[in-house]
Length: 159
Ligand SMILES: Cc1cc2nc3c(=O)[nH]c(=O)nc-3n(C[C@H](O)[C@H](O)[C@H](O)COP(=O)(O)O)c2cc1C
Image (cartoon, rainbow, N blue to C red):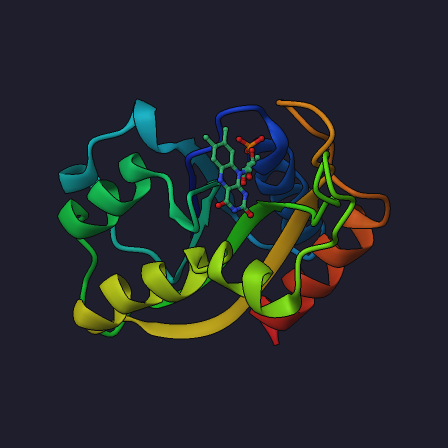
């Protein structure tokens, strides 16, 4: 059994989670998808593999996901994969300057921070993937090609 836990606010991460479910079920896996707001961290069941997905707030995982991972009952030695959704880089509205790679990296620490919590619980990582959302409006939209990326991510997870 594969258990996916995500914390999507605007729906993009939820779409990724559902796509992963669809792809992996087509490959014969059993997959459950949960929004972390709808479950209790202490009731997380043992699983063959966990997938955690988080939106980003100020460079890190959204607070609810950080708290969830810290509290979750995850058996040491469990395997996990992680994904984050991030705003795509946009030029500064006033100056038109495009952020440098280094500046973007500082805004994209979501997966390393999740990894640190999970490593502290003795979990083993198998794969990760970053999904970009267009940055031109609040809700944004997953960039074209995201389904193919989900397919590759699923292959890496199941490899
Ligand atoms: C208050 C706020 C802060 C954000 N900060 C970042 C950030 O530091 N880095 C980043 O890549 N995206 C940032 N974003 C964009 C989110 O990553 C994006 O909204 C989210 O991944 C979309 O996923 P969801 O549709 O599943 O909620 C921010 C969004 C909001 C609303």
